Length: 126
Image (cartoon, rainbow, N blue to C red):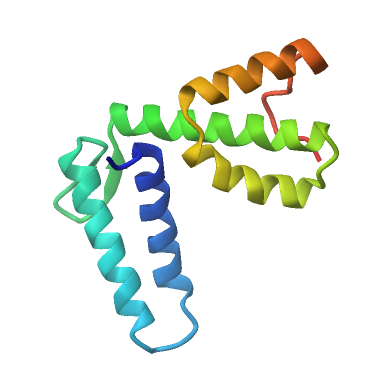
């Protein structure tokens, strides 16, 4: 099963990679193929729409998943900073964790942190 939030982020990252690739090797085409493949999955899943000019927009469903992933990222990064991880490392690690942690584990971690530290801020703090 594809993790919906991961697919949205993979699409965005693949698109960014297309425009920032430094060489003219086959990596450009690899990223383009990945972006196209993920775009098809997202479109078929009802997460994005593509208009006649090729502009991509998140649907309500896609925006909901993207918002949930972003909220997870912010919370996880702040949690890691609260336990002593540098902001830079916390932000990178949160980016990885947010896609693989189950809802059950994430909610349990939030509850544990709330009982241990109090509320974890909902915005980035540096």
